[in-house]
Length: 69
Image (cartoon, rainbow, N blue to C red; front, side, top):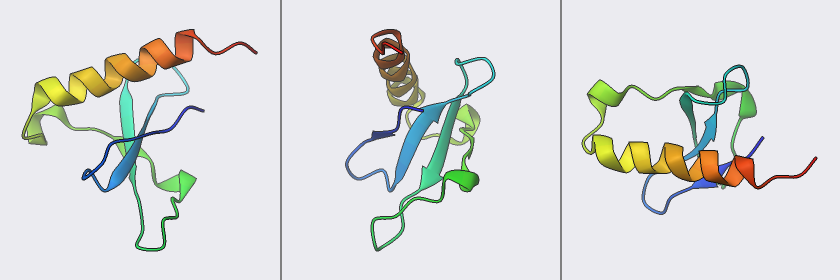
């Protein structure tokens, strides 16, 4: 699982483990921790800047294509 943090977003992003294309996010708590069981799909309709969210998804896709297992 690749996690991506963007400054001032208050959450971390990852891609769906099933299809690898849907963007998920989970909140970052005040102590800097993240509960990996709290990931939820990102609702593009509720986002202020849909293009920024799509850029985040594309960045995660690029990162995941560079990972060697």
